[in-house]
Image 1 (tube, protein in one colour):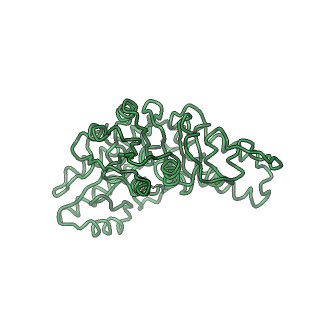
Image 2: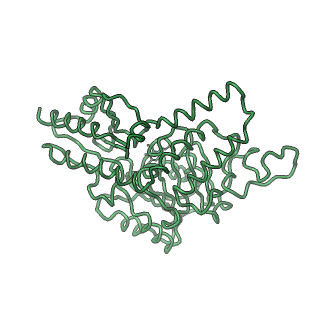
Image 3: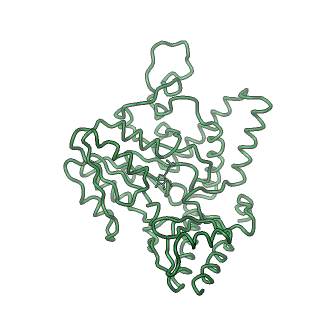
Length: 377
Ligand SMILES: Cc1ncc(COP(=O)(O)O)c(C=O)c1O
């Protein structure tokens, strides 16, 4: 445990509960970035082949994290929104096609589909609040439905969906399942094969504990060539680096979605962050996170005036707890928490708290202590 505490040397008077927004880096990630900077100062890209080794390891780690069949299924992208756009503007839509989304998606996983309206594509929003989210989503499918685009974990309510159930249901209906995994990957285990994902995407800066600017795009192998490409360059070619060649074709692997020079700095960081998650093990990460979320839930439920806006059941949540407090405007409460160095977010009509597996007990104790004081004012 000490080794983990050393990875997150946050000041004793800072209470970080905002991993669902932008997470702190582990110390090893900062060291990887420092090492890379020093290397670039002294020897530039002399050892580029070693950088490619790190990049290869990163793809392997991401493939393991998603349980993708191979690292060839993994593309390194700028962010979740870019990967969603690759799918939205890659599939061959027909007039009248339908896309199912939920009514509480983060804007990235809504507007990208609504942007297809000029092509005659209809976006159907399904309300998830009736307690049977998966049934409601599947029941909304019609013979015209081509794709279901859903966040594995909703960014505001924290609702985690049963992806396996959705995936099997989509498969039976001939619907492609596209999963925005940014609020799940790194918090709770994920398996693109058992959940029959056609596509899955996530960014590194939340539960994966890495900087912004580098994310992952999983594209099922048989669908890779069905996505029309809209970005071209040297790096996405089958024979990348063979600059004298006139003929070309996009890489058979998911590298076809990576048009030019990679975000090598981001790769150094994300590889280091994932090495920590892999060392700890996703099962342990998940259990430790659930324990902390449960502690917050129990503490909040004991306070008068608290309205819980997120889910209580373990199998339906990941790392997000959202609540409102009677007599307090969310903005004022958020300010009050911020003044006390409790870092969290205002989302979904309440205050969103998001610990991670390493969150020290003092962070939860202090947050609940302050909320108790505020609630009894
Ligand atoms: C569910 C969800 N999807 C997408 C995003 C944005 O992702 P990106 O910035 O990687 O495009 C967020 C960010 O909060 C999110 O919560």
